[in-house]
Length: 492
Image 1 (cartoon, rainbow, N blue to C red):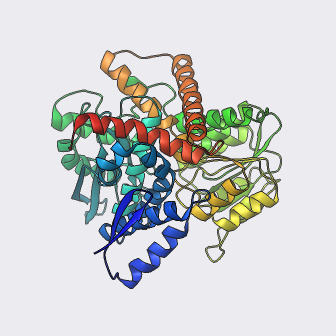
Image 2 (image 1 turned 90 degrees about the vertical axis):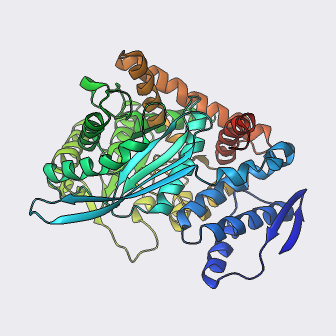
C-alpha cells in the first residue's frame, strides 16, 4: 500500500487496479465542481479510488459521491473532527441494504419474478425516507445514488428525516390494474418487515403513483395490522396530504423563483423548457404558467413536443389525461394541437435537440443524466439564464462544470427538487397528529421550506468561499447537519 498526504489528509492507494475500474476512475477524478487545487484534486481522486474499488460496477452511485466529495474538502479542512471520525467514509456506506425476490402471476397465469431492493442509507437525523421506483432500469447502483442524494436532500428540508430509496425492476407500463396489484402485494409482503412510521417511510417515485401507493399501503395494513403513517403519497381520504402530488413540481419552481430574485427578476414573460411528462414535469408546468412564464416543451421516452404558443392550462389538462389516465405517448399531442411539432427520440444523437430551443429557463424533470455537456453548450449559446433540476442528477458532471464556469444560475436537484420529500414529511406530521391541514397551509409551508433551502445553500456557499455556487452550498449544508448528528451518536 502506498501512502499519500494531501493537505493533512492521509489517503491509501492500493497498487494495481483492473483496467475497467481504471477507466471509470479516470473519468470520475477528472470531473470537478469548480476549480480545484492539486491537493484537493489529489484527495478527491484518492477517496474516489477507494470508493470505486468497493463499488466497481455502480457508475451512478460513484458519480453522485464524486459530486459531493468535491464540495466537502474545504469543510473537512476546517473541521478535522469530521475527518478523524471518518464521517465521509461512513456516510458513503448504506446502513442497510435489503434485497429480495418478488414473484407474481400475470393475467395469463404465467409466473413472473422481479427483484426488489430497499437501500436504508442514513437514519442519523430521523427515520429513513425516500421513494420507491418501479422501472426496468432499477438496479443497486441507481438506488444507492438516489438514496445517497436523499440523505443530503432530506437534511436540507430542516425536517427530521433520514435518507433511503427502494424499488424494483418492474415496469407498470402496459400492465393491467390487477397485475400491478398482484405485484405490489408480493413486493410489500417482504418489505413490510423492514418499514414503519418510526423506522422507514417509503413514498412514490417513477412508476409508483397513486394506484401503486394504494395497493402497497393496503397490503402493509393487512400484514402489519395497523393503520399508521408508514407510507406517504396516500390519497386524501385515507391519510394523504394536500399538495403532495404537486409538491416536487411546485417546489422546484419556488426554488427557481428565489434564485431569479437574486438577479432582480421573476418568471413573468419568461420562456421555459421542461423535460419529462410525469408528475414533476406536469406540476412544474402548472406553477410556471401560474407565475407568468410560457412553457414550450415537454418530453417522454418517445420524444418531445415543441409548442411555441405555450402549453397553457387547457393543453396541460389534456396531457395529464393522456399520461395519468390513458398512459399514452406525447406524439399524440399534435393531433388536437396542430400548431405544435413532435420530434421523435433519436438514440444515435449525443444530445437532445429540445435543449437547443431558445429559452430563458430550463427545467430537466425526467431522469438522471438526461442532459449532456453538448446540451449545456446549446443552452449557453442561447444565453440561458437559469437551469433548475426537477429530476435527480439529470445533468452529467461535465455539463454542471460548464454551468458553474459560466456562472449560470443553477439549482441542483438535491436542493431544488426537495419539495416532494418536504411535503411527505408534512404528511407524516399530519398522520402523527391525526389532522389534515388545508391546501393553503401546506402550500405556505412548502414555499417557506423551499425559500429556507435556497437561503441555506446560498449562505453555506458564501461561508465556504464559493458565493453563488448552489452545488457546493447544498452539499455542505446537507452534510454538516448529518455529520454533526453522527458525531453526537458515536461510532454506529
